[in-house]
Image (cartoon, rainbow, N blue to C red):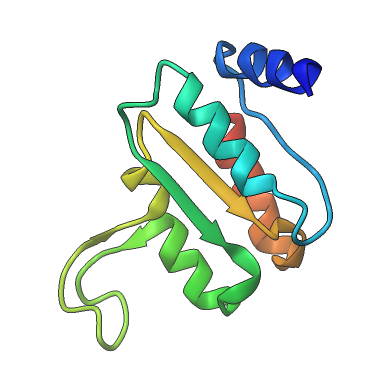
Length: 112
């Protein structure tokens, strides 16, 4: 257990993007929250998105936001989760459930 906490602290002190893998219900979000709380970003937002719980077209709007009038019901500009988490931590759960085209777009954003 001590080794796990040491690893989490090392990750928290790193400025890099991190991918934590594991089956459903294994505590990935708990680990990510711990890393966030131990990091210099702990005073910034922690935003979690369950990608498997949203339809593909809704997920894209949820992640990247949209402008007023972009579609029926878009009555105002809405920032996406990437913008809301700016400077903090964005936890994307169940990313394997995302369609390949959206995975490619996500990869581009994460690489920037």
